[in-house]
Image (cartoon, rainbow, N blue to C red; front, side, top):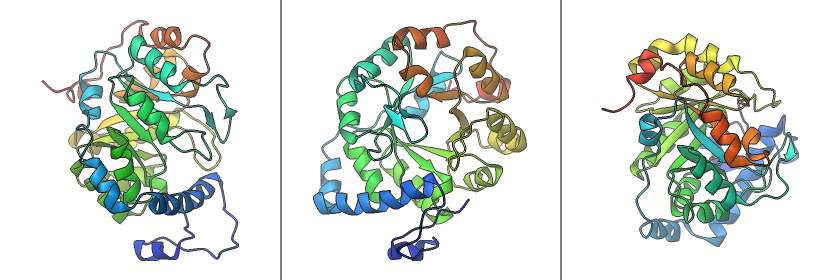
Length: 305
């Protein structure tokens, strides 16, 4: 998949540029085009230099990756604070990000993911800040990152980790953004959906945390075989580079967690199936506290001494 851009200045970054009246081919391209306009407006409201100065005032980032590796839960849980999605609409009408985050923390989630996209997921950076002031768990900024400005903005909002989606970024931007995230003391969760995207991710220098999204971002179909197949196809490289794998999307039952964990995922990212439950804390406890699994040998070797 190659995501086209509308902004002419992106041409130098190896993105094909479309004519002004061109229609997006799918929802992911539509989101990226909207994000271009959104980031331009953010720069008007807060300059890059002001943003960089603001970062100096925030506390250092928590170690998102280490938390996943050291968690006693297997697989460890990244629980997502998510109100809506383009495919499902509003998932939880009585959405209270702080109470959801606190329920996740009480029930034993290792880390949290916070949707910050407003236009398509009804999230916000305000939610990220509110949650940061209310829980102690490491936080992932779940955003469609297309510019360095957004990475700085995520750190200013006290995110500890940032999502990079391989499908929407060039190889050059992927490496530059990954390096920037590490320089700012954060963790990069690099997300793929196909073997071609995985090969691109594995070519990155210093890749530490890999997300395998079981959801096709073009048509939003979900298949857990995606995690199984991609790990199987690239197991040798994943093992040799000591990369921690997160399986994302389509996880509803403990059996789903067991399935992707046996394939080699050390962690899972779950949003919809938890946030829509009447009793979120009970739902998390149930999915985490059923019969413990045997950790695959190579996954166990990733855990720090």
